Amino acid sequence: MLDPEEIGHSANMRLLANVPLDAPFDVPEAWGTDLAFQGDYAFVGNYEGFAVHDIGDPAHPEVVTRVACPGVQNDISVSGDLLFLSIDEPRTDDTCAGGPTGPEDPSGWEGIRIFDISDKAHPRYVSAVRTECGSHTHTIVPGKDTGTVYLYVSSPGPVPGSESCPAPHENISIVEVPVANPRSARVVATPELFPEQRPEDESFAAGCHDITAYPEKGLAAGACFGDGVLMDISDPVAPRVLQIVSDRDNFSIWHSATFNNAGTKIVFSDESGGGLAPTCGASDDPTKGADAVYELTPDRRLVRHAYFKIPRVQDAKENCVAHNGSLIPVPGRDVMVQAWYMGGVSVWDFTDSDHPKEIAYFERGPLPRAFAGSWSAYYYNGHIYSSDITEGLDVLRLDDPLTDPAKAVRMTELNAQTQRSYG
Image (cartoon, rainbow, N blue to C red; front, side, top):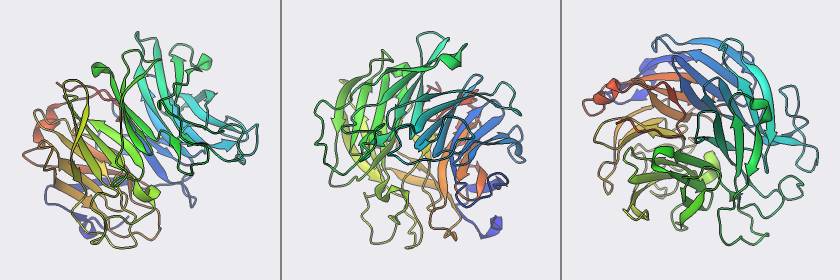
């Protein structure tokens, strides 16, 4: 960990604490990934498994346990006593003991793993569900009653030569999880999102990268590699496409989406270069690897207004691109915090859809590895938590008159891709 005094940051944001990676996450590709929260706990995905942190005292977070369960990329979410992991690589079996196998292996497994976390110190593997083309990310969508949750599974594809991910791949998978009996979880639907299939020989990925649901509004927004998709999810097992938006001139890889609290705007991000490219240099295109602010009209049509990219120039060795973020619950304003890999963590205001602006930041600067920096940065109960790929869990304190009202908003659970109204 760098000396906090050597880390770049705005006057209104500072590093409060850091929990470095440690065994069993001390191997070269033990990369930190996504975050989820529940009560006084933060759950952090890692290519080698996941960790549970006690954040009851944000200035002194403590590791409760680290669970070794390898799999790319272990995208993580929690709901009640259940924890879900996305596995997007074929493996010899669905357990934590299995190893990687090739895409040409017809018996290779990839999909969703399920854990019981009723005992936070001793998570227990419960079951797994195979999904088409694996699971790169997933999104929790509550059922019509508390006894069922659904997972919208996003995955890239097709994979040449693969029996489990053949062309075409224009759909997502929906996994139904009976809360009282997660062992019986199963795929109940594979809705196709695109009315016209792309030619099978096209080289870019199909399917979706990420989906954000806003169940209270009956809406979801999918970042589906080459397009953004707006969906009606009033029936959670039968999502209905309302609109597909494209931006071939400015966006390369539609990565993720965030609604504002009112459900009248959506921020789509572009992961140009797949997270490995330095897109934040002085001569780089201001839209490549950036965010786009869309407004949602009363008849539920998306209209693009402006782009946002961090204003701090990064050097040619820093992978920098828009990545995972969440709203900061400031009543009456649209403010979010977002990870930018080596570009650090940015807080920006898009209340004025045509003139978004950064209001706070934190960044370590160039790191020794080519793939590094903040993977996910989310606001939870008064602090910002960042999962840094190589440096572990960061806790950031934000003190600003504009965002201070958010400190009064308390959450009991947060999965950033399942949005809930805060007032």
